[in-house]
Image 1 (cartoon, chains in turn orange, brown):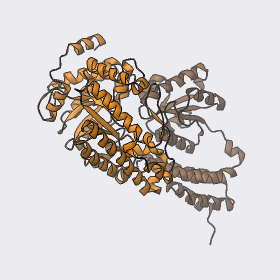
Image 2 (image 1 turned 45 degrees about the vertical axis):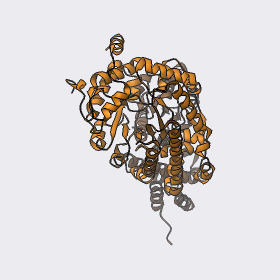
Image 3 (image 1 turned 90 degrees about the horizontal axis):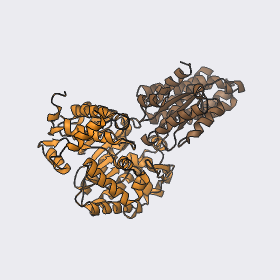
Image 4 (image 1 turned 60 degrees about the vertical axis):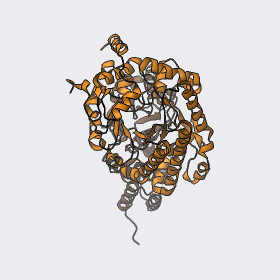
Length: 373
Length: 219
């Protein structure tokens, strides 16, 4: 399909349901006009598409507002987010960060280099942290501008948070050398993230939450470490978030997770977003009766580098593999969509959701897939 | 007490590395030197062979990242003892040279460190530029040391483009044909490597060593 044809099909399309109606219909087992979709953490990529740098989007609420407005007007995507980023807790407790003009923030110097210094961070009170207050303030500005849109939040998983406070290689060694101190750090991570959720709920009255936990993958942790350290902390976090926000959170883990799935099936989450390196079909078989699944169009090879047809084919493949997942499936990207993703690939993704995800019902292949299987 | 034979001590060094004994290995290496045995043999047949075994166990998913890190701690603790006792020609040798680093804008380096450890163990001479490396530094260092391979990694999609820039810079510097380029890191794919003109791509540290050996004709 060429760009002109895609644009015509895209702009001629008239939604029968709003995003909220679609999600509600699908969740309650009714037929939705098409399958709910989510393009993970797309604000940075959208800002780039609309001619803004990441720093402008980050620093200037007016730019942020314009990105949300244009995302709504040009792609029909609504919804606000005010949440912790992967390294926010680290930043709040003293990790020095670098925020590039274009691109994702990163750690410059960790707050502590060894667990012997753990006390230095434990004293940081989340409830008075200016870092969190600034995120709440941005949320308030967005909500004032778009009162009709729902607002959601996000937190980083405990092991991921810990790796933004102290270097991961030391942390891994300390799972053997100082296991209790590692557990104390993980508990502290949970405490901060739940405290954040409480502040968010107090301000905005609850809402959906996504846990991003890239470090808690089988590329970095053994299953034994996952069971001994990461998973118990995830369980505490999930329980705390559910209590604070009034609903179960979703979970995304980047990279290899397949060796952990039989354990992860016990997590009390609403959904799991499957990285593109894993098989959605297998995820459905092993976890689909425990929570909804999301995924897993490759962000780099397909969204950033692929053609319009590559995006459409990849979406079809995902729908084919995921749609019959018993507790539901959202078409999604396998991880954050990269800055630089071309406009037509966003359009192709949404086109595919509308076309091949047409007539979606939880646990069933959408009507749009007839003749495509 | 009967003094341990050379073979017994080498076996102990090997076991210390595989079993992550970073304190005991120092005692064993000292005992080995005091008995007058050859440092080079101890390094190659004891420490390095142990690290190679750890790499195999990682490849077989018996060992994980943490195990490899702890094995390498034992490896380096032993090397610190034995290396000063190498005869100079053994220390220099004709090893293939690798310049390695995480590209500009990315401070993740756990994967790079694993590759570094395993390449070093496999007999490569490593020039580690660390993390968040300015692109020009790869080229400058490669020229300076007459490198055989440049190995770059990233974990972030936003910094992937820098790898392609390095390939272009090597062309501009006129040394593109002298050095092979290897790339890795979670967002990197074979397709991406082909696109930027990198000869080598590997999914993990063990594959990276095989790839490096192939690229320089050591395989």
